[in-house]
Image 1: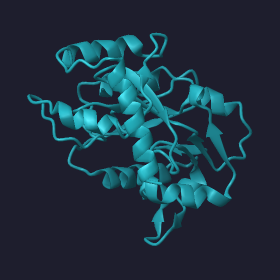
Image 2: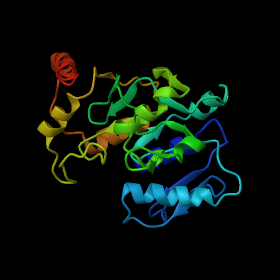
Image 3: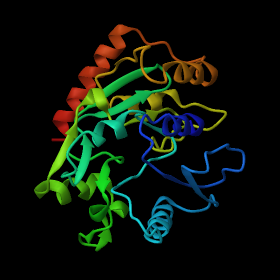
Length: 248
């Protein structure tokens, strides 16, 4: 997935961006004028964010915005061009719907949550603002616990779902899915139960930016999987709605 996430960055229709990559990139060909690399794979997420912020603070000219992106998620290749057309008066741009793609069955959902997703576009001065009970910088805090509270009284912009900032990739091996499947054993019941927390699921359109790449990954790693017909996905939708009602 990292290779596809990298391609989505390189394919940006806007050229006004820089990316900081933390980890082993020795086998990657990255454009030197766009990517800064910090070696090391033994850091947790917060340590990586702290290192990135410290690196940015050393720049003589600070960025207008900061985006935090996991390496198994895909940023929209057109989102930076889209927000460049909007007035620069917003403290944060966030997805009005959380776009998730199931890599196994090649389906997509646009769920609506009360909190902000992991990847939003923070205006720089807000990303580094210290606040909350732990007095931490916004970028370092849990997105689903505090970001929506912090931005509740600020000028924000909800990105429509057809312009989604990013697409969260769900699979039995996804880091963000936090499931217990391994490289040799897929726990299908666990993954299918996990999908009930999202929805409704619809087929991923073949016109999607990276449909062919996702299809190739799916066929390579998930060629053998439990078959599910239309009735299963209708039931999934009902379970999803029930979960929403129970968790209100």
